[in-house]
Image 1 (tube, rainbow, N blue to C red):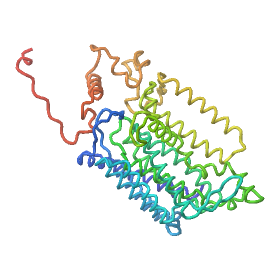
Image 2 (image 1 turned 90 degrees about the vertical axis):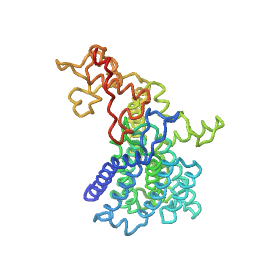
Image 3 (image 1 turned 135 degrees about the vertical axis):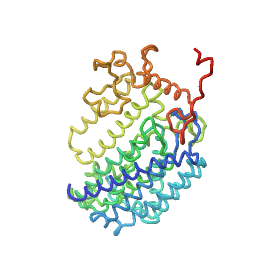
Image 4 (image 1 turned 180 degrees about the vertical axis):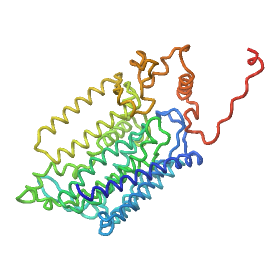
Length: 464
């Protein structure tokens, strides 16, 4: 791929490193200021967990933009385009609104107004949709008001779609990371493959977005030590929308020069190529579908579209028997299948094997979706690369017990008889019971200082 991809990888790594290193101090700050709301009826976690993870993600965004501005192959993007500055302005505004919401729980309509203002700020600085390539008609130029309304609508829809799907540990960050990776491949092909400079800012935005999500995921995977909150979910939603807006409507069909003939014939023949351009929400199809279903469900029940409930897709996966981790992996699977399937079809629309692969993977996903009790096991040689809680316990002979072979990841400690449970296993069992009972501080998420020592036993107990 050459030199440009190395600069993108460097920007991605710096963004991920800064986000990862800032998340720990941000967690302590969130605990100190009390940004830990009580458990709500729709929540799936069982103990108060600090929010404000978006502060670390915003720091990673700023670091990524600063590094990219000093790289030889990326600095021209800042010199010839105002889109990076437009992104930073809109991101700072939406991030500030999210921080206030994480701490003070502001009204939903106020947040909606802030989202529209952030989108308008980006439009005023040049980050807007200029025209749309419509199959069968050709390139349709948009007026200033049409472009502004379409841009604001896309930003608001994307932000709320990501915000709605942020209900399980690591779900929103992982799905946005998958979507941005697929979109990065598409925009990089447009820029470096077809020499379309209009796709360069979108390529930079998606690389930075991947770094933000990858840096935050280690702290947010189940069991999460910190949540991104609205300050993080709205921020990554806005960056994802900015990447789609930056490339949507700014690529002229004639610049690709893949087909001869009139503009109408070229646009009609290049329908698969324009799938990610015309429908940028395909890269977040799962969050967008969840958003639409939530609005219809709440309106049908006579509730406000902004009223919270437990009817989201991830809640339904938990209800049919899937564990927390498996529900997240299923959502990852469908997000990757739709995002990379759309990008692959746009590149090679005439290849039948792409359609067959998508159909086969969809069938496999449906089978896994209908087997909530199936517990996959990693090979023994691969267990060294997994966290300790996902490894099978071994006896002195080095073989896993038969009871654990049939137990799920969360059922291992509960299958030990009382007389055979070691001290370490007993502590883990008591800790799991405390977390299940909702005891604050059971897994250390609320512990800021030293814990109080237990009181000494009474004289009657000592004599026994």
